[in-house]
Image 1 (spheres, rainbow, N blue to C red):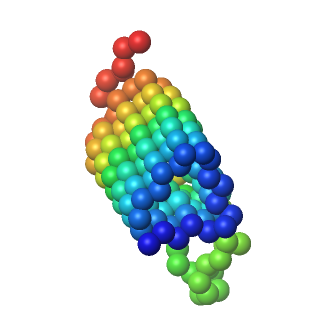
Image 2 (image 1 turned 60 degrees about the vertical axis):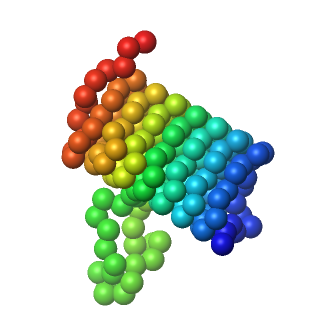
Length: 156
């Protein structure tokens, strides 16, 4: 089952596998979206990306071209999420502010990584599997751990 709303902008030659939920997002040419992936409104995925299965890409996430996202990667867009507002009613879009995340060209994010909002993953950076990324990752750098720390600078 694929749920792809009419407001999704798909580039040329996009491959989408079963059991996905895409709405209000943009996906660039030649990108592959794996099974059990959700991409929310106002999220952007560039050209030539691979988004592996069981990944959640929320509103406010921008993924540039040539990015690899491993299995079960989770992005967030709220540092202090709550179910209800001050009046005790379920929150609506008016009750919180989306905090964006940017993944720069050529970056790779390992399986089961979690990325807190408000950060930038630098160009060609690598995030190790299972990492909890809480701050910016410099370009051409490998980070890993919980919280993610710089392991190595990639040579040119």
